Length: 110
Length: 117
Image 1 (cartoon, rainbow over the protein chains, first blue to last red):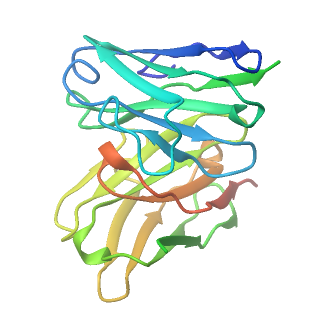
Image 2 (tube, rainbow over the protein chains, first blue to last red):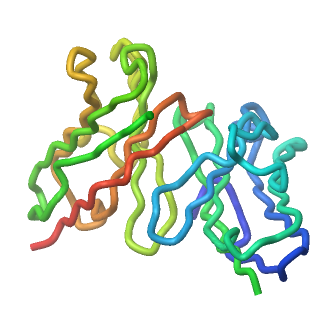
């Protein structure tokens, strides 16, 4: 059972917009920033979004992040086949004094 | 180019020990915090441990506290994870990642640790 809650799966067709939710609590998302990681099949995770909505250089602006209260969302517009991957949200938890990840969402491009 | 290369993984018996290394290059290792994260087969990511740039502040997940020790040698640009009292459920790919937990970037390619009798 992960501290941050994500839907286990999501799907969309090419060109569509999909969103992935991440629900936490006051001690993690409610207090600290949220990051999102993309893990393509067979590879190491890669930073996708940091500080709730910022994109590292090289990440397409099709990817966007937002946070409200104790929840966060990752949105992908103009879905492409290469977006098929596992997506994880993450935040520091002040109560645990440690980092926490969501359980991950497997995105399928139909 | 920033590179992180983990090593030291392998097969170990339950109750045994293993030390993982993460060799860093392409950035100022001395001034960057580091983390270890693992991923059990077919499962999600689990944060394990954080160490600040000086090596004098560390944090651990409850699942490894008292069994694992994170350390670093800034003269060798290398991060370590000493793993003791290993259990079957410690079987996973272990990743090192640069930065504080708010900005884990990049990640190494990972090293597989298998705990089995």
